[in-house]
Length: 94
Image (cartoon, rainbow, N blue to C red; front, side, top):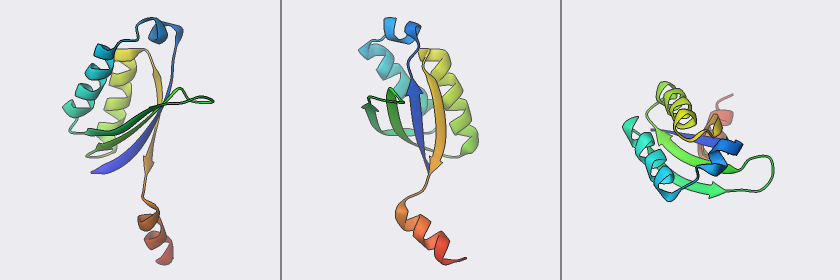
């Protein structure tokens, strides 16, 4: 499983339709793509939401990101992430 950071930005529609049930549907949607939500945070500043998710690969991340936008009206910018330990190991091989 790969880790992805999903940075979300609310639209006015997304804010109007905000419910606990929609959050549950979003978590279920990630599961449909073989993933798991590790953490979800509401944030102030450039992004309104940050999700930390595990997904099998890039293809599933693309599908999940687009499907979440369709479901919620929230625009997501999804980026792969590696742990600092894995990053250090990769760099040591250069």
